[in-house]
Length: 285
Image 1 (tube, rainbow, N blue to C red):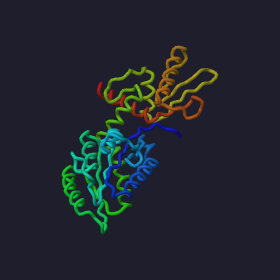
Image 2 (spheres, rainbow, N blue to C red):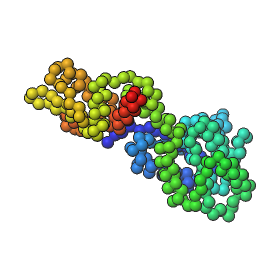
Image 3 (tube, one colour):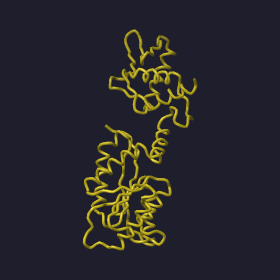
Image 4 (cartoon, rainbow, N blue to C red):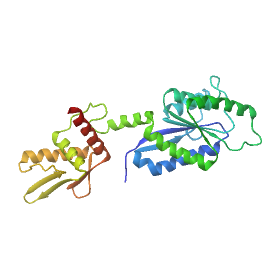
């Protein structure tokens, strides 16, 4: 079944000695999407210079990467093993520049350093540069370490779930987008006021954790949601309550169970609206 999701760009930043890990990050992200995307309403999009940069002339390569990828990234995953990378003039390496500029915008960054055995042809100068930079990152709380590929891949998936749920930057994005989906009160408390009938239906169904029933029979119609059973004998009342149901459905707050408009349930957005209405009730007491 189709569902709406917010796409977050995940930039993979690293020197040239961790090509396998770069692919592992992509694989981990694809697996995370398959398992968690529908639940969190988030789709992660891995991006990197090898797949998302077209050849260009007239600009420094790092500047091209910054403009084409870094600026649009929401999450950055940095990976290191034995190398720090080549200097850019202002920064110790291109990857360091990407991480620094990403963090300067208060976006989410995680840096992973491999503790695998070093290769025989290791560049000792690069290794020392990496160790120096590692001390800086340790003080900033950016680092994690891994011993093998399977551990690394699992860390990526586990940490992504934690970040999606708890990172302030990510939560701010999701909350802002969610506030634009519905006109029921959002965190700003500024919204178009729903009708009294809409509010009563949401609160009654939510409090009772029940479905909403709208039945048609020879003698007329009936509506019930929890302990709510309005009198629909008069045409004006029937029109108001039927319109409230249609508005809730059009806003995506309730959904038909497939019984030709006779049985509805609260969607995720509907439950969010219910929680916000309950919060308003408490504030107004």
